[in-house]
Length: 164
Length: 61
Image (cartoon, rainbow over all chains, first blue to last red; front, side, top):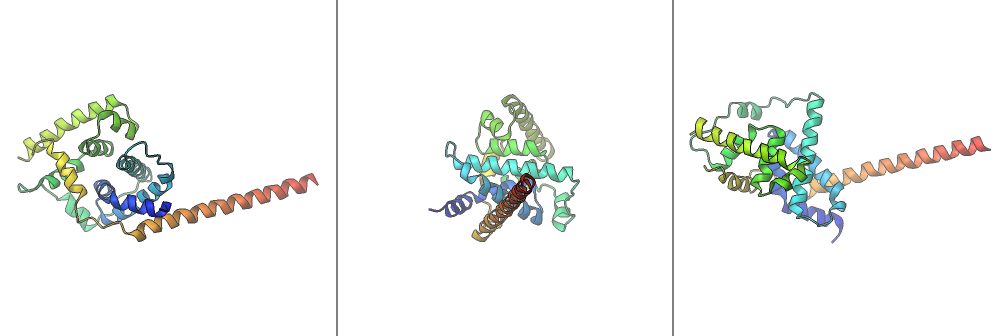
């Protein structure tokens, strides 16, 4: 199989991971598409260096998150603001309905976190341990552990005290 | 919702059908973009090397 074909197959198998991460950081449709294109480009550039020592999904998480976090940092440095689209306005007024399902609650909870904490929660939800998360995000394991404990408490508080 | 239900929620979000699919054309577009930019860099390096070679050659002669 040629490198291109192998790459296309890899991306399509892992579409869910790429889409979910991009949508978490860039909820507006246009920004989402731009971010996803950047991620695909970065994955393609890094693809020849993937040696198969870790799972392909782990590599996808690592490259996708690092690309997105760098893009967010650059956007912030440039003072870029998200366009105020109707979607964005809808999100600002978004309030969690009492009938919200787990997926909506998760999106709502994660949406309230900063960029780094979002990444930690997503990786934790995927089942990665503190050491693995630390390696993927270039943080110390202690830092991840502390942040994760604080996040779990915060998420519990949000959910149980404010919305139920 | 228990805090561990977040893991299940993340799993559900990944399978969400509302996301636009990543089409083969999207991926090929990214590959083409990369190849085009690499080719531009290669051409630039080649032109620069040729120019430097000629410059040094002329100065030496």
